Image 1 (cartoon, rainbow, N blue to C red):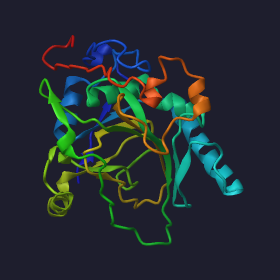
Image 2 (tube, rainbow, N blue to C red):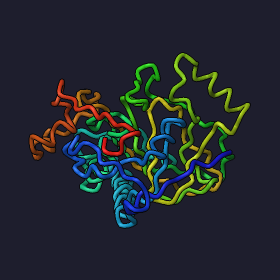
Image 3 (spheres, helix red, strand yellow):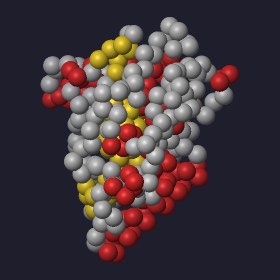
Length: 304
C-alpha cells in the first residue's frame, strides 16, 4: 500500500517556489507568500490530497495535545459540556471528539486561523474561505480486542459540485487535518482513495470495491506530528487501521467559500463573535454573502 508522500513546508523560498498570490484574500491569511508549490498543487489535483510536514511547530502540537486531553479529563469528571455552542460527537474511551472549537481555547482558534492552514484551504477552494467545521479527536484501540478491518469510507461532498479554473480543480469544501502524534504505517493515519475526488456519477460502493481489487489506490498518511493533510471533501476518506495500538490525536478545520452559511450546531458562539472585529467576523458567520473574492491562480504564471 503506498504511503502518502509528504512535503516540507518549513523551507525557505530558495528551497522551493512560493507563488505570490493576491494579498489578503481572507482577513485571517494576510501572509499570502505561503501556498502550495506548483508540484504540490498538481499532486492535490491528481490525487485529491497532499500532505505537508512542519506546518505546526512542536510547541504548538504539545499545547493542542495538552488542551484536548484536558477537555477529555474535565468531561469524564463532570459529564457536562464546558461551554455553549459546542458539542461532543463521541465521548467514549476509544473515540473522544470535541466539535465547534474556536471559542473553547485560544490554541484552537489559533489553529483554525493559522495563515498557513487558511492559505492551503484558499488554494484548494479557489478563493476566500470561512470556517465551516472544526473538531479535535482522540482515537484509541483496545489491545484486548481484535483489529477491525473496517475502514468506514465516506465523503461529505459530491464531486459534481466541484469546478475548474485555469486548469485547476477546486472543491467548495476542503479539510485541513493535522496529526498531533507521529504516524507510522501501523498507527491508523487518515486514508484516502486516491483520485476519487473527480469521479462524478461513479458510486462510492464501486470505488470502494475497486480498492479491494487494487489496494494501491488506498493511500495512508505516514508523517511526523504537526503534519497537515489537505484534501477535497469529495475525496473518499477514512481513519486508517490502527494495528500498533498507539493513541492518535488530531485536529481539523473544514473550510468553504465565505458566502456559505454556518451549519446547524456549528454556529459561532455569540459572546465570542462579539469580541471580533468587523473584518474577522465573516470568517466565522458568513456575513460577506455575495462578496466572495475568487482566487484565479495560474500555474503558468508564478505571479498569479
